[in-house]
Length: 88
Image 1 (cartoon, rainbow, N blue to C red):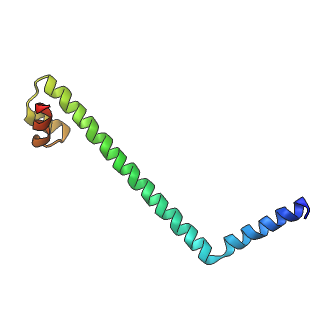
Image 2 (cartoon, rainbow, N blue to C red; image 1 turned 60 degrees about the horizontal axis):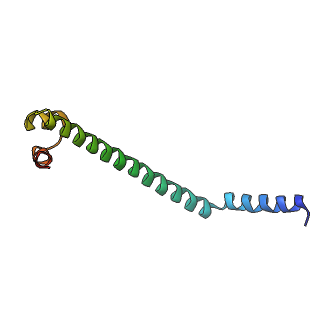
Image 3 (cartoon, rainbow, N blue to C red; image 1 turned 180 degrees about the vertical axis):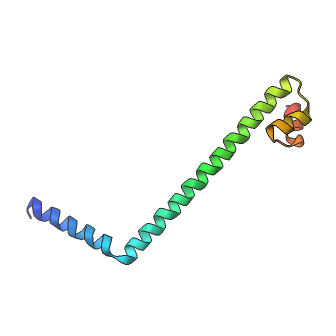
């Protein structure tokens, strides 16, 4: 088989893949499942990063003797969480 024939065969298979409705639907569904999972992972990562930053800020504020009430108000952390940080 010549090089051009091999290329044409590959193009033909690709065309059949693209034009097969069931294959296209499966591909699209898998793509969107992965996209949703990726976005969910990003959101969770951002939330975790924000939480870690709030804890870092709270620890710095504790070192400077801010009140637990003020720290909670500024960082959005719960009083209980800040009290645990103060013990550590």
